[in-house]
Image (cartoon, rainbow over all chains, first blue to last red; front, top):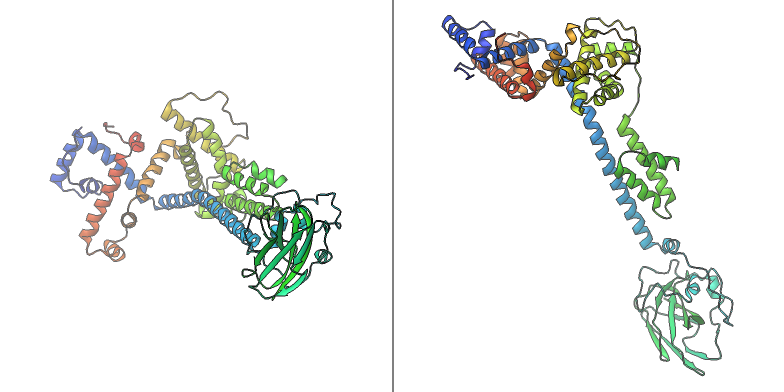
Length: 260
Length: 247
């Protein structure tokens, strides 16, 4: 069924009765011969019916727009939901991270101190609220000479009552004698604190730790084999700090330094 | 916990994963609760829209008569699942569901226009009956399948006859397909064809469409119509409606 050569507007003009006699004659002849032309004329007739019925077209247009809206709303709603969820998770996560990073209290909550390990030490009783003493027998969370600048003293010179009781007290007076510094010392930021001690009897390695005025460890040395240690306070901030010397994980002596 | 399990039962797996992630996050109970509440609100909103309103059958028919979007939207929300249950249970696809729903809407609209809706049952039952009839006719025509023996409507009998000439499924589908192609035409073609078929004088069309003269209007109309005819002739879905043989 080969399509005959007719002008593209002939079908329309045929339905509009706008073909002249010769055109109509030719068109009728082709209509008899060609199935494609017949089909096209039939489609055109149906289209004319549809296009004449504007009301139906309006209704279909309405249905189409509602249908599009109906199905796109669900998809868009879902995408919005996902985007909002990820955005909220990201924002809240970032806020929490920043909060924990700059708030030591939050960090303490995140890593609560374990229970105090009871030892057979003859020294003074260790208060349970003193978190750093609780690390006895466990690896320290702060390694080597790492200095955590994120732990500045919160309210500069406020004393911590639990530690104040222990300032200057020796727990192993028979084997260890501290020569310097004095238990309660004041100095300027940037000065060097000199720790000197001597052993009476066998020498054991000691560790020097620095705590802020909330009792949180901000600095801890590895085991020191010698008799002295120099602490540079150049990186410290103004405030009250406590130092403690431990031997075989047992507290030997505790003191404080005020940095102005 | 109830909210958690309710949300976990939702089909959206990603969403469930998020909920799970929130719930196992240690020490963030308040945050988890807030997030769950937030998610449930958004999810509820995206599913149902901001407000759920129920219309009476009379209001729906009146709204449909006036072609009001919110009533059509309401029908989509409330009656679409009914059509889906009929079509998808009987080897229909998602597209079939959409088509049958639109055809049923159109039948309802036509009836409402002629004030020919004398309901002796609920509108939902009536809608169900029309869509079932359309789908069964379409199935028969397209696939020549035998109806399932168990496919019965155990509802109040609807006053709807399959032999009603207005609701012949064949015409409905043809009309729907043709209008779909019409609305896929360029906007200016749609506008021009509509103007031409509403018998608006050519001079007025020239002014409205900003064309230079009547000849251009005619040529443009023929071109648009030709384009539409070609689209229909080339659409495989339209082939059942194109008859090459002499009638």
